[in-house]
Image 1 (cartoon, helix red, strand yellow):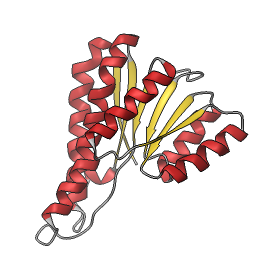
Image 2 (cartoon, helix red, strand yellow):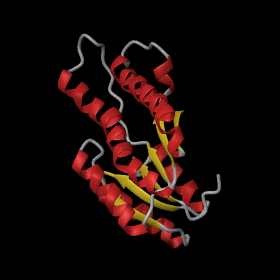
Image 3 (cartoon, helix red, strand yellow):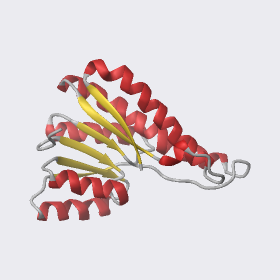
Length: 184
């Protein structure tokens, strides 16, 4: 897939996998919209990319907030008139034994790791349909294929995202919207 001039939203773009992905896509000529909670971190990254003559915008977004997610999608669409690729990378791990994990913490992690990506997909899919297709990459984790004591709650969120990705892939194939789940 040629990504030159493609409009790409990358969530969790302020560090780690998201930041590395943003840099690679920008170097390949994509127009990158960087989403994360930290506006300051995003501004620093966008300035770095601008110094390299790359096109990038910062879209501060809390991926556990549906209104913020919809605002992110709308602002990128308004800026560029389309969204070609969504990379759902934002996420957080939690550790602890199932018997001991705080249920409110589990809800927060589920909101961020599962509902956030689904809400982003739901906001972007209509726009991708208008464009005749697109690509959604959900960043999963290899732990979704393993049983490791102490990270069962985190693993459960990644299993859920795997299955949602598999289902959406089948449901959206006719719309030329490809869904990939990539383990980290």
